[in-house]
Amino acid sequence: MLHLYLPTTAVEMKNHFINICECKSVSRSEIIKSIRTGGCQTIIDIQNITGASTGCGRCKPKVLEVLMQELRRKNSDDKQLQIPF
Ligand code: FES
Image 1 (cartoon, rainbow, N blue to C red):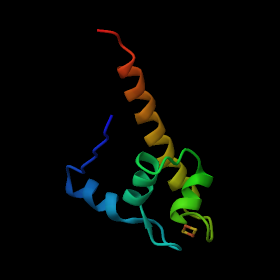
Image 2: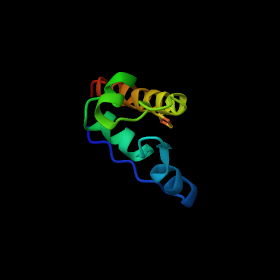
Image 3: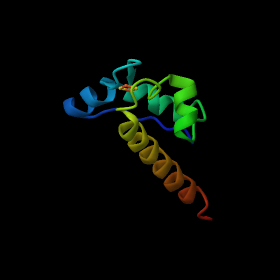
């Protein structure tokens, strides 16, 4: 299933493109893209693909939060696909 997330409010738009990782200049949208299309499933995958959270580490909780949100969304979508019609 193709996941297309488009921010719908000005606040969501700002949060989408703001850098989560200041040390490596990695935005929330880059992290989401690494999960949805890059196959990242762990913080280590995200670190390897985007470089986020490989500096001071201060952003790690935020990166993990985005990862958990995306994994929950994926699991929710997978369950919906298993419903027989
Ligand atoms: S803010 Fe992400 S590693 Fe420092």
